[in-house]
Length: 179
Image (tube, rainbow, N blue to C red):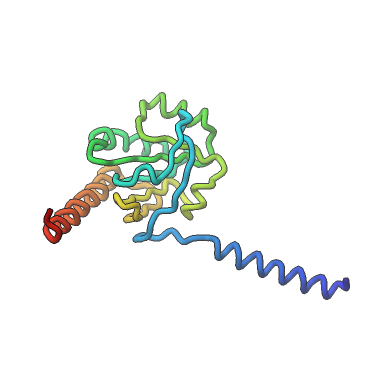
């Protein structure tokens, strides 16, 4: 095969690869269903996003080096609202399971804690900074994406807004579809 033909074949293969990879990548947008993922939490229990359907879910991507304190501040709100169908999934990116487990124990965290040492879920959600926080409604639709730090009171307002919106939607449904 001549050098020129080899270059053409290589160019065609690269073009095919580029279009296949780009086609396979799914945009993660507000208003669309959150991509499914499965993992195990720090205790070894299987966790998937779909098991939280029917709850408002907060996905909190974090790293020990930058946002451990802000994650810790979410715990009191979660404890006082978990009875309201709220789930918080804290996904640590890059740290080992041992480090995350130690952090969770030393801070008495009860939220669902996952590790994503190879950034698979982080990349799936097209996150690129820490923290990245997503608020997902009870039907699994992304309603808010927060890139970077946010005060806990602001996050609480956004979550409460989602509860209020859900309540209005359910009331409107009941009004239009009486039993």
